[in-house]
Amino acid sequence: MNYISTRNNQKNFSFKDVFLKGLADDGGLFVPKSIKQFQKEELDNLKNLSYNDLAAEIIYPFIGDFMSKDDLISMISKSYSNFRSDDVVKISQRRLMTIHEENNVFNIAVEGNFDDCQNLVKAMFNDEKFSKAINMSGVNSINWARIIAQSVYYFYAFFKVGNGQPLSFSVPTGNFGDIYAGYLAKKLGLPIDKLIVATNKNDILHRAISGGDYSQKKVEETNTPSMDIQIASNFERLLYDVKDCNSEVTKGVMAEIKNNTYKIDKNDLDKIKKNFVSEMLDENETVKMIKTINDEHQMVVDPHTAVGIGAVRKLGLEKNCVVLSTAHPCKFPKAIEDAISKTENLPESLKYIYDRKEKFELLSNDIEKVKKYVMNSI
Image 1: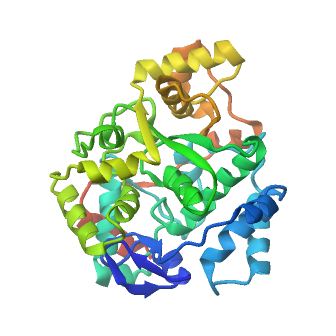
Image 2: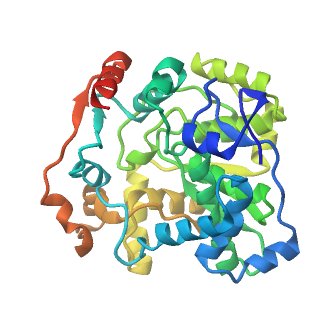
């Protein structure tokens, strides 16, 4: 399979290029040149597979000759063997990153927000001399490898609860990566009805999808920090599709977005609305939803998941809908305390993270200082 950049579809890349680079040299995002849909009989053959085997079948067509199918199966088995739903969850992500003892891992904290950090990463990628000097790669949601891995659980959920009927999915959304994986699953032939973009008051995606307003505002800190974003990088992949895979037009759109002058026109908005709807919850609504779910189901959900549930209820799309639960509630003690007057405890397997010393460097939001730190560290 060949890949191209959303800003130059004349140059082909291999999966190895895509995986190791993360971001194209022209600043665009990698997408497959073409996608083969699963037919109904092929989907029927997938529905009884284990999660690991399903992942192999979905991911393998995207990787070309990067590795053999047997090697992929082995890698998947090793990767997912460390994840058990009862005790391994994404807890206190900062400490999990900063308590390491390895000498070749360096954590940088930036005086700024998510968008500032993402802009620094993109600037380093776009500095060709610098990025080549350090063999730079990116493994966050802009990396296509992560998108295809995330698309697997849409298939798995559909086979578990879909009963052959199209499902909608509500996804707490910040950088548009997870929900784009759902869009990819739909393009691959999975019967998905609507993809619900659930946001907090940093609602650029809700404003964009509901009315075409893609103007960036100041990022506000909320009780759902993973959605405190105003620049959703993966939205570029959707815009590339909406613009009929015209990379020159997409490049122009991204320049408008950078200048904060872009508005989605009606024709493009109609295309987006065929697949996406959106809704937002403010902080008070989020806390109330945590309480409501606890009252109704004796279950504690984290605030991001509460936004996903609340969006479904506000839109009236509860029927045949799956909400992606994205984090463990113990990561957000204040929101849980505000909602139900108690906090969730860390799983036993992760209590060690508070016994170790953190190690990270706090840097100003200055690209030259960040690059200097990186170069001096490698």
